Length: 318
Image 1 (cartoon, rainbow, N blue to C red):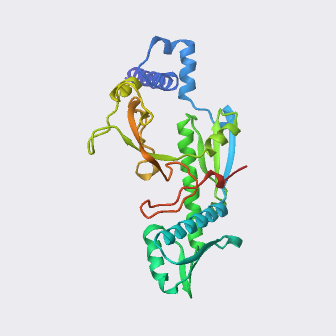
Image 2: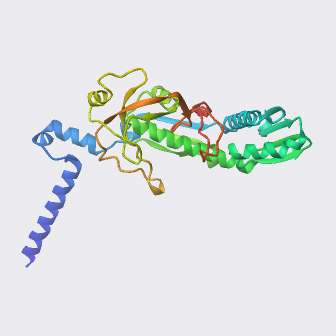
Image 3: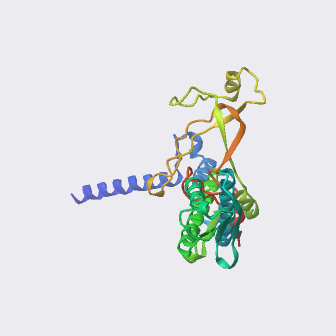
């Protein structure tokens, strides 16, 4: 009986050991004979075991969001938007001034006719997102101020947005096992970036600081709600446009972005569809709107809710 129990335990230990060895050196795909050669085993080890910064070396960067620049840019751009709205509405306005000195951020609008202040204020509310700002009226002047509580909220939003941008861009260029997390005290608005195996931090900085823009175009495809017409090759997409691509058309790769799932977890990217191609017809005047990643600061428009995109000019690297 004892010998039988000992045999069972031995078999169990052997099976578990073999499974463990396979987990370490086995491929993450259908095995081939090459996977069990010495070069194949080394390749599998490198793919299965991700060395950290302490073992592999790499780049260690700390970035800080310059919140004072975020507030300044927000104030300047909202002031410009308010002035544009007042002029387009035909309201008599002497001028709109942005004040950003001493940690106080205000927008001062001076009207030539005090009786029009309420109309101007309502017109601004409809088109510019000034949530968080407080406003007051005196004589022929409206003053919007950004209180400390709103500054704290916007600074936190800007830091979280910067962290998401960094993570997205590192994923896009294939940096393996990067560490992107908050650093220091919460009010420091710093982000730690560790990239094992990356020996050129300056190149990474330039990549992360690059500005982006989103352009609205018409996809040559059946009308909604039909899905976009895609093609397996660039040649097929060109053929759909008549074989040649005129100056008014473009053929570009097509991909659908996986947004983070609930709880902040990234959607599964292991089973992505192969690259597809689509034909595009730009609008007569291509409309540039808020970037999906980064853009220069713009006024927050009510039709596009959420924090305004931040500019990488507000990032400071250590």
